[in-house]
Amino acid sequence: MNISNVRVDAHVVPSHGFWAVKIEGTERTSGYWYTKLEATSFAMDFARNNRSSVVVHGANGVIQNVWSYDAFRGIDELTTNTTKETN
Image (cartoon, rainbow, N blue to C red; front, side, top):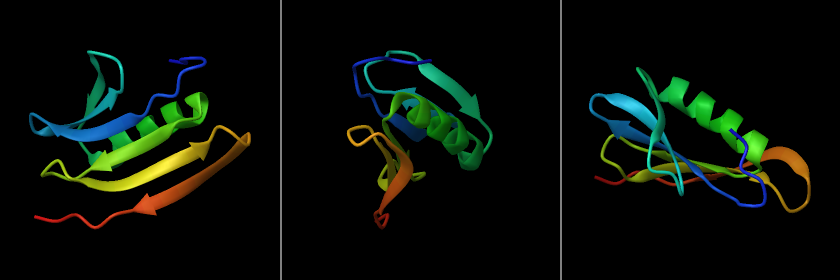
């Protein structure tokens, strides 16, 4: 999936006992995985291909991490903004 000229983020979220990837601006879920790691891997591939970000949520829905590909400088490096999940 490549969405040109529009920056959309991929969110890794808990869903019905699985981990889902939801792409901003779309109604459907991109898929379901048994582990957060598998879902995050898919989301990171999406973000790399679309020069966007990955937003990883915890089991309680609170954002834990945000990784961004620098779309504006043309750099294919991942920058990290880690937040502490609160209960």
